[in-house]
Image (tube, rainbow, N blue to C red):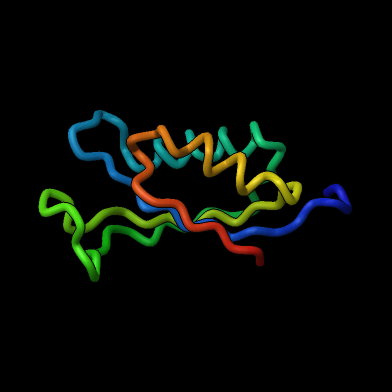
Length: 98
């Protein structure tokens, strides 16, 4: 691991409604994007489907949550958010420094 890398823990809310992709396939795609921003995935934890506390879309009352731990350069979270912003399978992204 590079000494300039930092550790991060990201939570992704995934939406596979109307898609043929499974949650595992979406997670593999997210892991590829993390690798593209020079990140190294250290752990994946599939939390499963949970209902939202505040529903913003009546058609989507809950979704699958996945935690991914990774190490990456300090600018990687911004690049990761930007790349996943247009991905309709990733409903929300939360990245925190670990």
